[in-house]
Image (cartoon, rainbow, N blue to C red; front, side):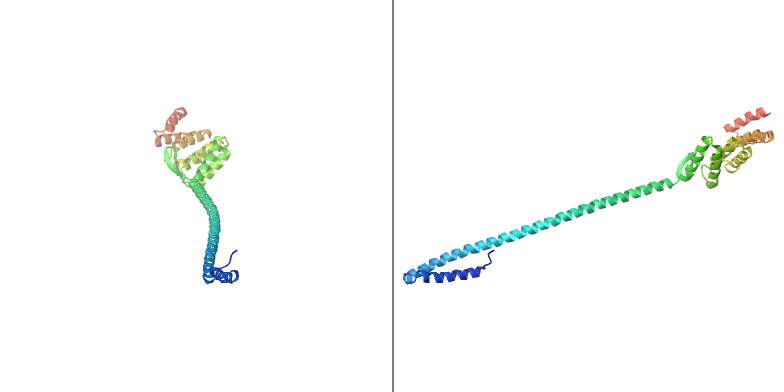
Length: 253
């Protein structure tokens, strides 16, 4: 690597210019010729010096350019690394946002399942908790499947747990029917009387009174059977159960 400065090169050239004519032309040239030779030699030295300086400047420029290229490559490498890190962070952020969205979607779905929903029961709208809906449906599956003993237990538990439920009147009514199917007529009458007394506005009230009369008939208690039928006709004259009661009263006479 060239380390000579421009001043040192110039000094060397001057020394060479002073030394060469003295050694090469001493005693051979006159003063004019010697001065001319010196001037020519100095011109050549100056030319050489300029060429050397140009070469030094060119090498310096190339070194600077090379340094800049190296720095640029290093900068580009760092930028590439940062871009890679940015992509990783962006991906992680997207995954985190998706997980958060999925979490809230799942939470919302779970909360929605816990919220009461509107259902129509015997033509009436009622807000029913999902838990009571499942409990009622499970009890009715037992009843429809002919497992009246389990159904009676499940329906009794339902009305104890959900006395204000929109299904309470129906559960009480089917509880009476489960007892009737089990030939437990006294409990059947008690269950249906609860329907009549506590849920008199229910669509099941008239049918409950008809079932009371049926239970008394099974117990051979004709007197109370007739009374139940007459009370049914008086309270719910326009019901289909009242028409059935009239037909039975005609037979009992």
